Length: 321
Image 1: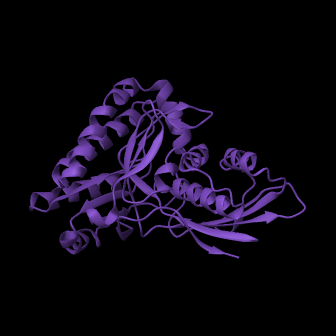
Image 2 (image 1 turned 90 degrees about the vertical axis):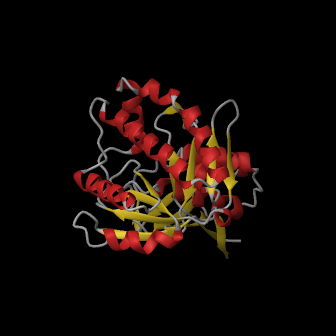
């Protein structure tokens, strides 16, 4: 086998983490629960760089000079494979990169899956989690589909807690600005950990929010899940805004979008929103309400684009050659 291509979908967290417990393993400081998004895809093709120990990474058609994001992942994988060659890695996203849509999570997940298959490593799932986490703390969630928990309390594991078909909710992503963010998530987390007076209280809310979200998912209670998701989102952004220097990924366009979502909810439509480390707004709703919600948002001046999605599946190999 000379090359392998794998895909993975980004995810967005309902109960979020913001901050790392360990900079070496890149382990998050708190557990999280997410949804995998089927309409957004990262594709990674990997082959051996025969006769050379150099790794080459081409992202969205451009060769990258800085491989700091993927080097720890490749080192971990090379230690298992005992591969002496470099790799040629070609990755691409069908959505904006580094704009708050978790491109690093899906990109790293697809890389790990492709490498594992190319070298026939038959890695355990725990190893896949460890490898992907080195590149992105959210990447272990993109290995799986549906509602996914990444647990870091006592025992590290990533697990699907509800399959996509078991609660087929719809997702609408409101792109308000597709520019690359100035402060990366990894940098922002470290700033917040060191400087925000609300960081410890943010950590303290995690266990309770995880339990509420798990209960809401088990009961398929969209109102209950929405309440804990929105509260958790606001708390995370409070930590960001009280950091020094201040971190503010939510823009005026983001806030305008959120206010319209609240107006839609006043009309009796069950939906909820969340915002990650970027200006985009993700909406979760019932499938029968999707078109109405899109109609209310599509012509708003603060919405550049609407992306319609469903809950997606995990990372997987799509081609071998």
